[in-house]
Image 1 (tube, helix red, strand yellow):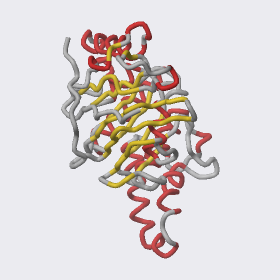
Image 2 (tube, one colour):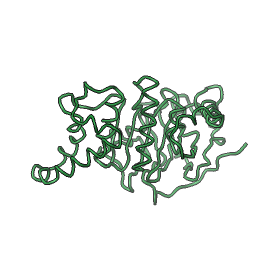
Image 3 (cartoon, one colour):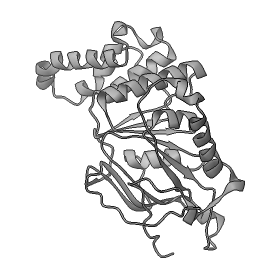
Image 4 (cartoon, one colour):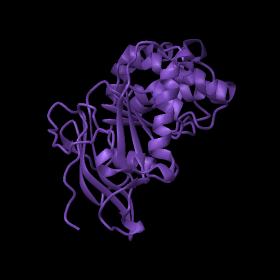
Length: 300
């Protein structure tokens, strides 16, 4: 069996870089020794069992929470408070019911631009918003209001709303979790096609393994289920990145979900990250992606 070889990494050339990140709430350690780096244009899926800290990790990248230790860099700069470099799409739609689809998409630029600058830029920004609505296939719905749209359409508006701010990285926290399976799969295709056109950097959190594999060019498996030689108590057994897979892209058809290769990898992820009885040792983590590494843990 291959063993993961601890190695160092250089943040140069990386859009997003986390090194030795820990997050604790009181005595309870949620995330432990998180090391990962993301290059521009990657679509990174983060998957793991309930309670492993996926949303906590996203909130720290967004700047809503601070790590207990370690560092998080975006474009080489330390992450602190939320700023326009990071866009966010939640499970619940962030749309204003009294605004049309077009005005919802334009809200961010309008609020972040001075009055006179907005008057100069309004026409160009409107054209940009209409182009984004075309990208998410909603250009014909521009004058409608949220209550006139289906749930899937509303989420596509929310994606366009985040994209128009041109964030360095778009963070998505279970964005399709509240949708019916058929609509959810349709949105997965729409998102993948939009990413293929724009090549934005996306950090996508989900509990759904097939969704993570279908969308991501890279899949991080975050899990609290692993073994180690040190005798740390359960309250210090935080989740870690137990696997980092590089996924070949090329087709946006959902037919790939029915291939044997797809099913085998989904089962491997489920076995290695989701099943407590199948805990891998820390030296057996599947971290063979070229940008994976494990930094030395700080002294206890």
